[in-house]
Each structure stands twice: as structure tokens, then as C-alpha cells.
Amino acid sequence: MGEKKSKPADRMRVSQRIDQRMESNPLRRKKNPTEWKIKGELFLNCSCNVFCPCVVSLGAHPPTEGHCHAWMAIAIDEGHFEGEDIGGLNVGLLVDIPGRMAEGNWKVAAYVDERASQKAYNGILKIFSGAAGGTTGLFTMLVSEIIGAEREKVEIVREGKKRGIYIGRKIQGEIEMIAGKDADHPVMVSNSKYWMGPDIIAAQGTKSRVRDYGRVWDFGGKSAEVCPIEWQGPNP
Image (cartoon, rainbow, N blue to C red; front, side):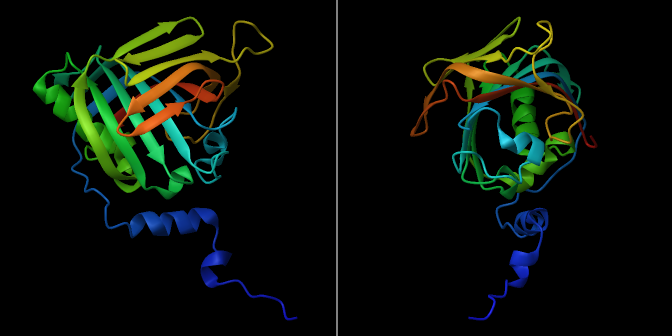
């Protein structure tokens, strides 16, 4: 039998194929870059086994379960959107990714702190949809559908090596950083090109339940991450 020849697309690097798919995605949102900044912390728990391969592969490696289901918590310690103060607000995200993170087709629901003013609420949604440009501008390529956006009481707890997010019965998530050789410093991936930030602390879900938008997920024992963030627009 003759040797089977690969199609031209198959010979392309994964990153090139991903870029092509994102560029041709008809559901891409348009950016309207504006002035904004967020400094704080993002932590998440996903359906991958410990440790999530998406971090070091920059989203090119398949998640360990073939898909990525996750919740994300964003504690905004300092920040503004077009001059409106958003410091002290919390945001939760439900994220449903069907395959490789970098291939897009994400479905996302956003829960914005009920304490946010109307301008802050609108600004936070623009930031996390990618429409405001800057650090999160890539979401215009990755997120194909925003399945919901609502005001909620979003409680975030940060104590030592533990993190928690509580949004009624919709998301109840708790994670704990993985201990390193030095008890004062948990296991960390540093100097990465990951979109969230260069330093990612490895963690594990301890209690993690999502019940909303037809999703019923439990990430207890699964991979988690904690990342200091300093994002801005229009240019990161």
C-alpha cells in the first residue's frame, strides 16, 4: 500500500490552524477599544485532571477530558472603566469550552457584583466579552456565545492558601493551593505566556459545584489555578 498523504491543513502547526479558525469565525465580536484597568486576582477550577495542560501549552493541548468546563472568579482590588471606579467588585464566570481552549467556541455566562453601578456593570461586561479591547480582547475570537449576564451577590473569600466563590446555589467553589517543598510557597508555573498572567499557582478543587444554564458540574479534586492579574485596555 502507498503511503497516505496528509492534507495541506494537516501539515500546518496546530497554532496556525487555530489562528485560521479564529480569524474566519463569523461569530467574532467587534472590538471597540477603550480605557480600562483591572488589578487583582483570578482563580478558577476546571474539569481537567491536575494539572491543567492548557496553561503550559497556551491552549493548544486538548483538555484532559476532551472538553473544558470551568468556573472563574475575579476579585477586582483596583480598577476603572472609562473613569468609573470598579475597585472592590467581584465577577464570576461560567465557561463551557468544547475542545482545545485556543480553538474558541467558548460559551460563557457572567455574574456581575450586584453592588456595581450601571456604568460599571456595562463596562465589566464589555471587558469580559473582549469588546473593550486590551488584555481580554482575545475573547472576541474565543467566545462564540454569551449565554447569560446578570447581577448577583458574588462573594469571594481569600484566606491563606484557600480561595472560594459563592453565587447563591449557582456556583459554590472552593480550591486550595498545592503545597511546595517550601511550605511558604505553593507550586507555581512562572514566566509563562499564558493569557491570564505570567505566574500561575497550581491548586486543586475541594468543593466545586455549578448548577445553572442547564449545566450540572462538580470539579472536586480537579485542577485549579490562582493568578495575580494586571490587565488593561486599549493596549495590554
